[in-house]
Image (cartoon, rainbow, N blue to C red; front, side):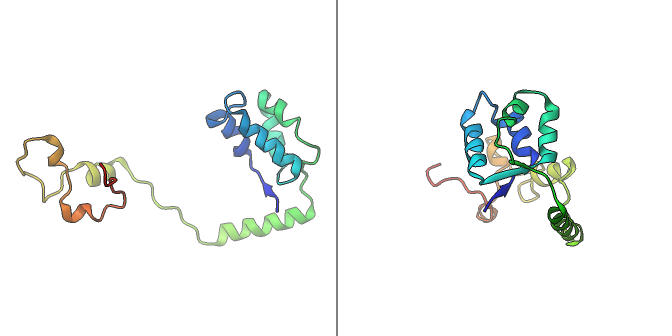
Length: 143
């Protein structure tokens, strides 16, 4: 089975985490997998990389011939089916949390703790034991 790589695997990786000179192992791995036929991409991705006119475009030019596939009629038909499915599947992203939600739910003291005298500031914001057990992220036992 081969994997089709999108632009982000190249451009975002280079910009953010895996610079060509910073993590050469990532790029060596990609090149090795490209030569073995495990990973491929399409010409549109090659065009986006080439438009950068930087060390990534020079590196991409060394990939084996045929790595960047030219879409044909079969690809176009399959792409159309996937696109239709994705746009009609009823996917709705979750609403983004607003800063007011953050302040209301996280930063505001809970009514059960409001007005409770405390000698240190940490205990004022500590959740009651009955609510702490519901927390999906728990502190390690040794903490």
